[in-house]
Image (cartoon, rainbow, N blue to C red; front, side):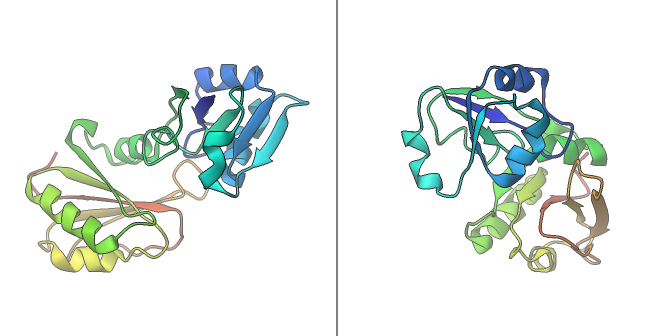
Length: 194
């Protein structure tokens, strides 16, 4: 099995990902991942949307499984056996847009997880001087995080990264940016960072 990162937005398939897809005969992925890879999937290739992630390990060995962004950043790469083909992640895009060094990143997932625990982890990492990259879900409340941070802490909401509707709003914990959509990540850092 091959687990292929399709990037976080259109046009972000790597040359390696395209090469793997050119030889694919059986592809699985979410609707979003399939849409991002559609142009690289060869005619005649059997394509299936994933609706039940619990059965992924039972897929045939020759299957290509698509993962949005990079499979190793809160993706399918750590859940499945097989070769992982990296993709361009939302982490890479957000930090490039904000001109922040990746070496200072602390990745925290709040996507479908305990938001209170994610906020507590974010506070600890910011206190350590790290730049927090928080993978959010639509229920995550940026205002809750902001209320617990020193007012001068920088907060960015990065929405629809890589898409034509991409939006990055930067503010502070004292005046946090407002979220408009459901596909977003939060980046937060203190004065000592970068």
